[in-house]
Figure 1 (cartoon, rainbow, N blue to C red):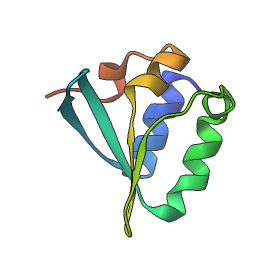
Figure 2 (cartoon, rainbow, N blue to C red):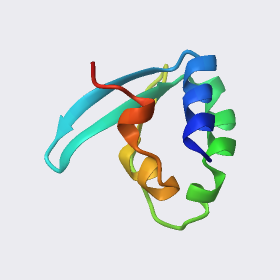
Figure 3 (cartoon, one colour):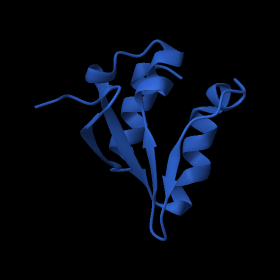
Length: 85
């Protein structure tokens, strides 16, 4: 996945996201509706085959995913896709 592919996916699908503070630093959380999960999983397929677990939060209406680790894996500058202002 490239920075442009991620940016287009977020924009084209109008995915909600926000910056959040955690004990280990700032990160972006994206919120996927359940029907959007398969397309997003296809986008990050290489990351999913990396065999390292990562945390997601599943609710009845969405899946929340922290993006820093995924962006790092692909060499994407997170603030280029998710501006802070």
